[in-house]
Image (cartoon, rainbow, N blue to C red; front, side, top):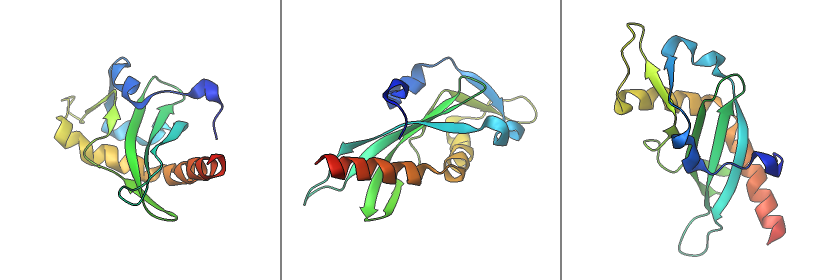
Amino acid sequence: MQPKSHHCPPWTVRAWPTLLWQLEKLEPLQLRHLDTRVTNPGDQVSRTAGQTVWAANSVQAGMAWDWIQLARGVVAMADPLSVITNLRLVNSEGAVLSPIESLRHLNEIVHMLPWQDEVERALTVSEQAA
């Protein structure tokens, strides 16, 4: 788990300065885990859910999304169409992609990250605290 000093509410990522990023450079972005939290511990009616935040080391780029626990040891993005980021993706011709066009690429980034491991850590801490 990351130190408390890295706590960053997911919605704040949208307030970070906009960063234009060429699609060809997505892999070197190298996002690191900032924070993962359980926002709903779940009960008989609703599933356990939360949020996770990731940021780049070299530039002020960030991404955040909601997750949901489908079963013990199985977590997924709650809504793959709702990735919060300050990145605006640019194609090879220099045109900024629309939010819908960007989603496929943002989801590719999410799927390359070890975010499920961080969610499992947060779930373990939450269960131990309960």
